[in-house]
Amino acid sequence: MPNPLHLPMVPRALRNLVSKPATRRYPYEIRPRFAGARGTIEFDVETCNYCMLCARRCPAAAITVSREERIWAIEQLTCIGCGVCVDVCAKNSLSMSVNSRAVHLRSEVGPQGQRPGHEEWHKPAPAAADVPVG
Amino acid sequence: MRRTTIPFGPQHPVLPEPLVLDLILMDEKVVDAVPTIGYIHRGLEMMVERVEYTEMGFVVERICGICSFMHGMGYCVSLESIMNVEVPERAAWLRLIWAEISRIQSHLLWLGLGADAFGFENLFMHCWRMREQILDIFEKTTGGRIIHSVNRIGGVKRDISDSELDAILVQLQTLGAAFKETARVFGTDPSIAHRLGGVGILSKVDALAVDAVGPMARASGLRTDTRLIGANYYDRIEFEPVVETAGDCLARVVVRMREIDASIDIVRQAIDKMPKGEGLPLENRPRGNPLGEVFTRLEQPRGEVLYYVKANGTKNLERFRARTPTFANIPAMIKLVKGCDLADVPNIILTIDPCISCTER
Image 1: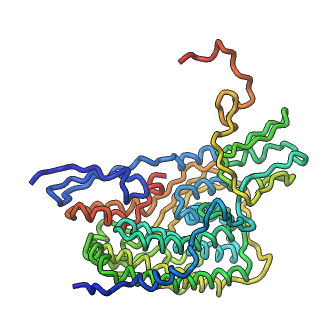
Image 2: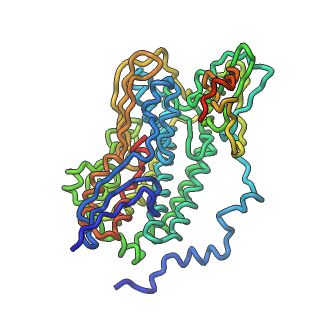
Image 3: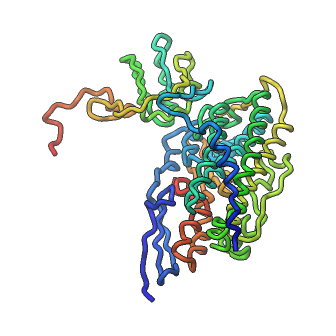
């Protein structure tokens, strides 16, 4: 027969009455990120030489670089924040901010709904007659 | 007696991840269970064909959110043994420390989920509050709470300063002391003993027969732990695997609780023994492409994990395969479920600590 007066949580419950809550009131109280936390990738357009190393090494294929058109693009929803691009960039054009990215409602997609990383990204949109109906 | 089939999962209040069990019942007793997996397959192993071997570690890490550090470490250890790269001493110690901290994190997560499954929501909150402190340690030292991305082939990306290591140890020991109070509730509360004690007993003979791994096997009295083979600097640590003999659901809870203390002690020993100082080497970058094949074993929080890597001398590996502990424990779970009451099924499933993301990759 178990002892009905065995209440091992009582000391903790009494302490909780006088202690601060373990949670924060999140939207009003935001804890600053720790220094060195991994956040979004930041790009410096002045120094980049469009060598395309970051696009080739990105495990998620989130980066698109075009040397001819001098375009550097990242799809934030595909980026996994591993930091490989920052490590391989010879010109130090890429850096990682400690702030995590805001929630994107829509992915940044190409004119035909492609994601960057696909070769169709920079192709012109097909003529209306080429688009299959239905 | 009527024979009924009840589908358990893929969505069920106690299941954090989609597992399906078709339970065949005679009245209230389960007579058979047919598992089905395949709801969360992402084809990560196939990605070796597209992602170069240097970056594949970051993909492997994402197999699972709970043991992500160990997955990344296992991949890097495999490639290091193929390419004959020696990891600098401080980097190897840092890996060991992170691995043990992630074990504490995983066990706290599971204890919380387990408490929630048997209806003790208060304990769930306490366990997850403690786990949050561990996640803060990870965010400070690796840059990420869940996905750490610090392992690289040949070493680690980041260092932890000596003063920070000491602070982490103090924080872990404080947490260990605070956890004792929660552990006392798990160990002495009559409702928990009633719900878990004597339920789902896996005998030592059966555990051997169905090849149970990890805490599941250790709760049945098997002294099995991959850390005992001494790889990855575990041979320099004095430690004894936590073994319980009862083999029931409560014993599996107790094993994981005691492993938290054991892991804190391993971290303490590692911080004592590692070389101190700033600017010590952390990485030996490998040269060229890997050629050869290797099997690697690690002890994850859920048990032994096995990696097979085959490299063909190009930038992309030929084959990467992970056999995860949950996959090895599914036969044990099926064995336990047969013959138990329907009401005990959630607890039995949860006490194997199922990680279906790992299992399906």
